[in-house]
Image 1 (cartoon, rainbow, N blue to C red):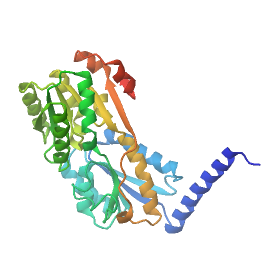
Image 2: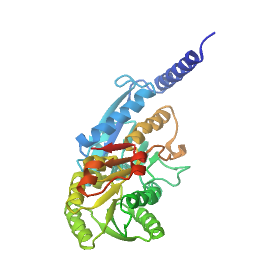
Image 3: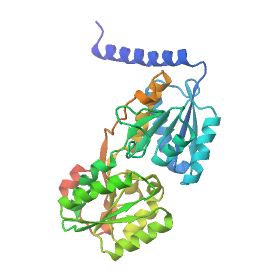
Image 4: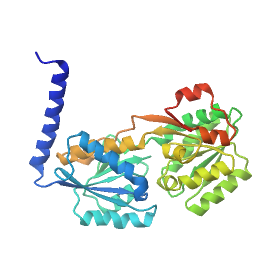
Length: 328
């Protein structure tokens, strides 16, 4: 009698074989997948590899079952639309976008080629889909739920700074989803009796001016709202926060790795890995308009202990226990 493990392994192998056979029946050549990202290639490389890993986990072999056409805008919004159009000229079967600006460019470039978006804060409010349950067009994928973790960000900051009374919020006025996130932060802050100071920064120069405003207002801490442009400028933001002795938190762990105090939010690379399941379904005949938008399933707290020391903050024992990672 076969062991339970043998049965599970055999079943998994049959599922993967079924996927491969289904793909082979619908395509006489490898599927050509476009990958579009706002950042530079170096910052985007881990995301490309996460996506490749997601496809490998589903039984896809690069070169045999798919080829990948990756394009990076180097932090320039103006480059995104030409890059999206270039992918279309390359006759890609679908496009994976890993942030809001890239998704916007893909939407402008095509209304027919399937687009699998990842890490978009508010797909409905941004005008990418009609509804989360029924996207209704050629775009589907995963949302990032950034606005829903505002209360947690404030709780974490208040644990480190019990007397927190004024909270700066760095937003990008070019990102339409930030208005809703800011409203969530302001609502959550009122529950704690904390005043908020929204500060806009649509470009590098404005980031420096934003920190001057924050310092002049004597804010105790700062939330950096998740944004592709801010992620590209995370080194500058982390450096200025340390220079102004400002505790900061964002949803993306890359901020903490760059020297910011904390990050709490979804695992962005895991979201990109999960995008492979959408690609798999579309390549086997599913329509994006019928594939419901998924929410993130993994959240993590990362604390930079070195930055905490620079800021003169001791990490409470209960917070250290909650952390998924502490960077020294």
